[in-house]
Length: 254
Length: 321
Image (cartoon, rainbow over all chains, first blue to last red; front, side, top):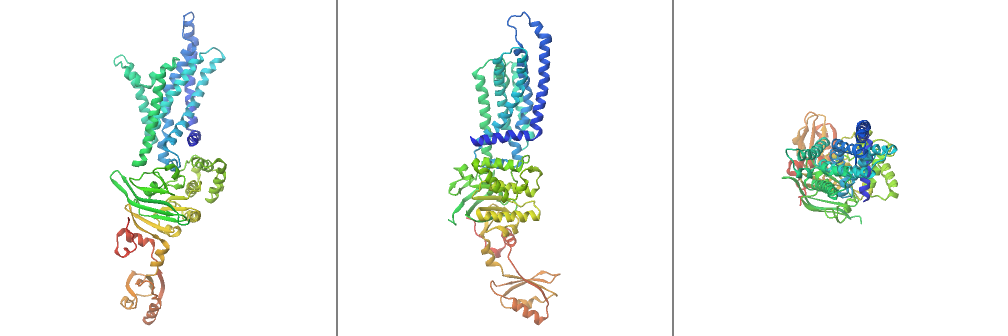
């Protein structure tokens, strides 16, 4: 357990040593803040007047906040591969993986340590982005439960992105290839959702397999344990694959 | 307990797909020994070291580190090993202190002892002045030292260094060698290199690996005692008649070493002093001797002979088991 924390801690700190983490946080925050302001303005100027007098009208949480979290999910499709690509590919390229492999720790501890470090960064990012919707509390009432459910959904979604990215990073020596393939995989899962829900090729299987369909129910404030288990299995599956891959390198020579 | 065997590896074999990189190599390392692993590029030195440190699994064979099976209890066995791979595993965006601190935690050194261990390793490797500097800004020699510091941080019984002096300037090489000699006093060291004088400078025992098998395994001192004086190098001021030299007692073959400089190699029976006879003959014939020196058999020769399969070194070669 201690070694996992040691690796996680070092991973987290190392992210901030390069400008990468800072620029990612800044860029994502800027873009989403713009989107958020845009949404708030639109709500105030056009949507709210129309909703006056309508029974059970959607509130600000549903209109503004849910769409913000959807945007975060979509933008992270492109950001996550950049975060995960370094995990093993870069270590392998620089020969630093040897340090971890010759230390008295197991491969699962290495993988879990890396994963935890990455998740710490992701939680930080989610926390910073969630400050925006919570800032609305100053002037209006929000459906806190719904926001929390969105945050939970987003965390699970990003946890599954990270696990997939970690695995693809363990397959190669070139960070850029790891990034490209992770981006490809994540995008493919979105395409699966789009094609599953398109009018011509309506397929509930495709929708079920895709990431996003499970994310959407969290955004509506619904906690469905099957969605939760989907993300859990997805992340766990890729983590186990990563451990197997690194173990295999020892047997067959990376 | 001076003869305690720290590494006992038997029949290590390693295939990369169908290519056999190691064919049954044995390694035994006793306490307080500095073992030089020698071989041309691609001989299997690095593979051997990767297997010994648990970075690669052998296709066949058994490895015991202080009696602990490396394959069955890798974590316990790895605690006794410090390893510097060919490329030092450095996070270049870290400071030296931060990096060593991280290594100490990875090695599970108790928090209370970490600081002392760090200071000790740093002073041992001459890093006290550079603790606050970023690793990426250090010279290659210093980076190498950080790599060594990382390997000795947890005071392991066994230190495995893969080509520690590659790419360093002569002064740095000298410093690293001194450091390795120093380490050899308290630890057992395995050192791989393809630079022969390096082995002569620091190792107690040499194991030469060629094409995946051991072709030579003996102590250096024995090697030098047995073979040091069988060839004399002789330089004259003028060309001489080699037949006359050949007729002297105990002399076996006289060969021209360097025609232009009138150098001759005189092979003679081991243990016989032929210098007086040569001097006498030179005086008779009016040859002016400019230099006379015993040619010590160098590892270079053994190396070349073993690898090119020349007959006269057969007695030295130890068959691989």
